[in-house]
Length: 194
Image (cartoon, rainbow, N blue to C red):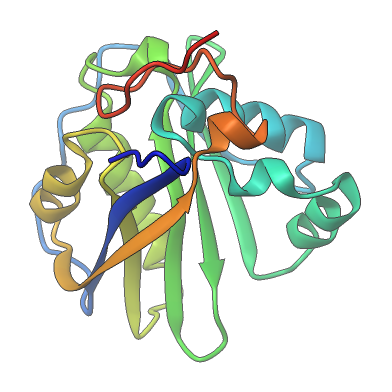
């Protein structure tokens, strides 16, 4: 996974669905839940969500964006951010991009570390999929990678996504570039020397 030159190798898996899945409702987690769209999401709140949900899985690309770039992105009409609250606390979020050509991308999806393993994932992903299908897009697609949660790919497939492509990628270790903490632990990465 990590080379001597500070590069990481990864495999990105692309999945899609071309029809809204017909399925029974997933069991609702035993918690006081609210799923809300973050209208006019601020860069600071977005960074909180992105960092909290994504840091354990090496999400770093949006950390490199300036506040101006992020503000302009969040202001786009086709970008939608939805936040799951459990007992009034942010428990996860998903991001959709609705392209005029008819595709909806589930750009980001995940739970905060405190809510992983508590029965929220299946219900929350089904809610994200149902939201993505609003407006009857041509297809809904998502991508995941080796560094995402080990059950992510299986969960996407369980919810109706089908793999249509896999691509190998190589990128600079974000712990070495300063985009992520050097102390970040991930099961697929050896620790860096202090």
